[in-house]
Length: 88
Length: 231
Image (cartoon, rainbow over the protein chains, first blue to last red):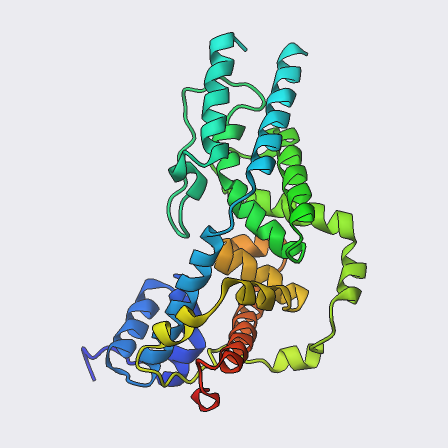
């Protein structure tokens, strides 16, 4: 029908959901997938769960902090190397 | 370098390294613009290393921890070698491009050089054959029934269990998952670090996530906060 935007199927959405969540989809496809999620009771909970998964893993990554001894040791070595080059 | 310039550099480096400069330590999030290189810096060979490379110390440490299977000493050695190598070859880095990808590439190459990839792959626990891995779907396989899946599932997880599940993934899967979900690299950046096509990155990443989630679900069921029928 003229003027009607094409709707993605549930299978299409499941196949492309990770790309959508990773922000790796072209804008027009992104909008089409988003429209589907807004009205689909089957796909939305999966989207919500996978989004929560990505939020969790990204928070997990921020909790990995390099030990202060390593920071200090690296800092001293780089200063030492820079100093040696300046002298050289 | 003058005394005052040296002291300024020491103070700045220490702020970055000690984590007191949080903005720098966190670095930009996935998809965000990287900081522009300063144009008023003197043209010295190692110039910009402290400002551009060191803020990624925690990210490289996190990546190293997963590469070394959670061995803190090995990870610290790997981080140190990575940054010293990056410092040594700093003139090869094109300023303003993606320094995080560049550091991850050096880190991975250093790891492979130290451990010998072929031997390392043979030693990988053979919990899954290639055929079995190919059978894992790339689309999400979870059937969510909970009304609040985030609270019901992820709030019950223990970081150590998740890290152990990541460490237990097949090597090729673990690499892409860590670079993407913990390292926040884009598909093209991961392809560049691992020297594989973008299509392979996507296929491995989506399968790795499904495999990881399946293992986390098993843990949730074992721990008793998710019913067996919730799959």
